[in-house]
Length: 132
Image 1 (cartoon, rainbow, N blue to C red):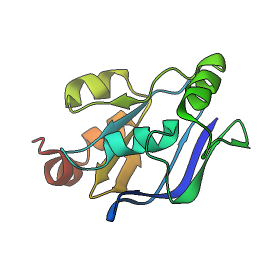
Image 2: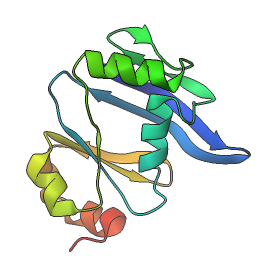
Image 3: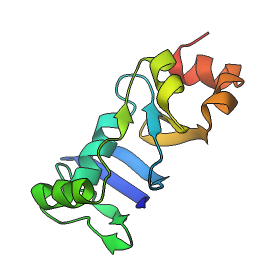
């Protein structure tokens, strides 16, 4: 299992991720959704070590991997069968392939649920994704 707990990530002095937490169970497909600049790519960069979080932790199978070199993190995730976290702005595609969705805005996860749950949340879709 991949566990991200309360991470805060910065680009120099710019605070981009604000206490983001996320779990990905073995075999689970999670879609990160959000508008441009929401923090999706920064979250992935933080997980794989390209932009390490300044606070919080990233664990895989119970081992803290935050602070490891990126090549070691990617190798470990791959060896254990975790190949991808979907970072997608294509709502229909993400909804079709994901087991669970997390919606990001301004560096935080503002909604988590199943694709069916999100599909029923018109206000969340309109406000954070621009989907009617």
